[in-house]
Amino acid sequence: MPESNLSGVLFDRLGGRSRLLHLLRHFYADVRQHREIGPIFAAHITDWPAHLEKIADFWSGATGGPALYNGPMPFKHISLGLEERHFAAWLDLWQRHCHAHLPPLEARQLIVLAESIGLRLRQIVARPAGPGA
Image (cartoon, rainbow, N blue to C red; front, side, top):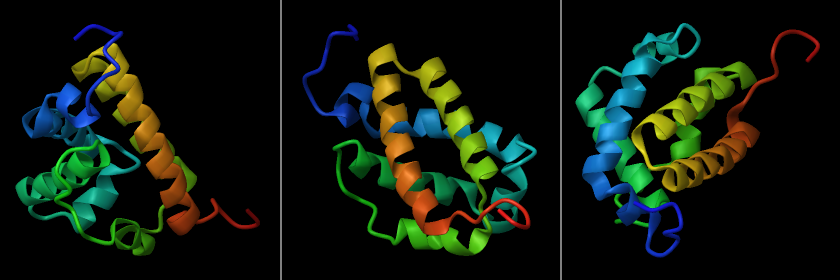
């Protein structure tokens, strides 16, 4: 896709659900191996195929595609004890995978969207790092 293609819904420009799932499979394969956030996911996710479908539902709606996710996403993260370092690790991997698997414009737009969602999520669930923080 040409970088100047600003028309159309991001979901469609990404290649729809199949391309979202492609990105998510590669991304979460690295997440599962990550020293900071891998253990959090391992402790809470037992059915990865179902989880990836649910996450694809979320990103579908977030990118202007079919709104298939109707769960309370932020509140599912409150009990996880997330800190800023967890968000930073997740976003770093997200950025890398977006750049590796998407055209430049769509990668940047999906990263900006993730940063915006992450900011709101941090405000709801992040805990300060260490005593006295």
